[in-house]
Length: 235
Image 1 (tube, rainbow, N blue to C red):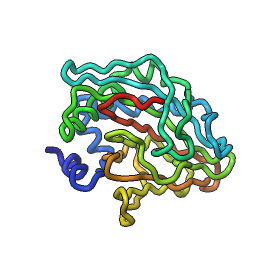
Image 2: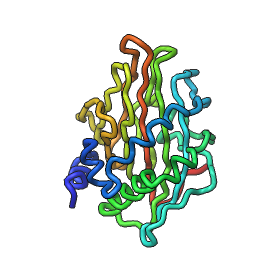
Image 3: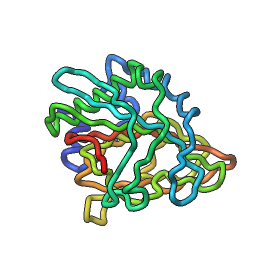
């Protein structure tokens, strides 16, 4: 079993360097960088209940059939979570602009989503994963940016992969992971592009602290992938 999965099984989370992620994606290692420019074309998130204008995002859903080794994009759908997992935005059907076809149809994207699914299935065998993909940009143009305005939370899925795409001219953005019901956790800051955090959503809660500009307005770009065996969350 890969060391990252040993850590995920033992601790409920695992961190990967960019090189470790590259190794996991072989033979398409080093191809994710081509996707990074698409984060500069994310529409503003109009659903923020705190009135903020700091978050930009795109969203798409996929079904990964592991037996047939197929990744199929579903018709575009709303993102929905119950209030038990997201007290701030739960209970809302939030429609976001879709991830572009150029990104979602790329070999690097397909390899990333399917490889993560294969790895998670080593810990939790399942015939298929229901995957939600979120491209996020949090910027500081209007002041403080909040990567997780809902605070420490779970997502209501089985596994989560959080990939740092870029971090430019910002301070803060510390990631915190704690056992469910526990107070002792870990704190660290993702800084290297394509460094990755894997989470067992049933066992840990997570959050990222606000960011502020480091001299000039900046931003923090991430890709968040969630994997759920029992279907997409819906009202």
